[in-house]
Structures are given as structure tokens and as C-alpha cells.
Image 1 (spheres, one colour):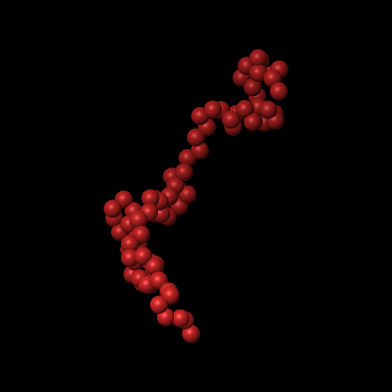
Image 2 (image 1 turned 30 degrees about the horizontal axis):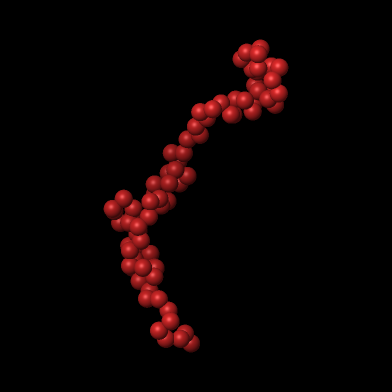
Length: 79
């Protein structure tokens, strides 16, 4: 049997807030949880994830390993 007076209080209907709105209800040891990201607005789960290649790393990789032709002859000598 569990000892008395050593366990935190359990809140079976704790509310989870994201951007000031209640997004779900869970069981927790705190009555309110404030989060920045949850599955409803995370790019992985919403499908809005975009790959941003600002430095040309993907193109450089593809050229280095011969998967894509280089655009300039000056880059051919680089290793």
C-alpha cells in the first residue's frame, strides 16, 4: 500500500494551454500546463515541414558525389 503524505496531488483533468488556448486535457501533478509546441502545431505532425537549403549544401553534396553536374568549370577542380 502507498505511504500517505508523500505523493504529490494528482489532477486527472489538468488543462494544457498553448498560445492561451486549451488544447487538451490530461492527468498531471499540476493543474495547468503551458506549452509552446504540441502535436497540433508541430511541423512534423501538421505536414507543413519544409526543407530550407539556404547555403546550397544539398547541391554541393550532389555535385561532389557526381549525382548532379556542376554549373561552372571553376568548381570542378575543387575537392
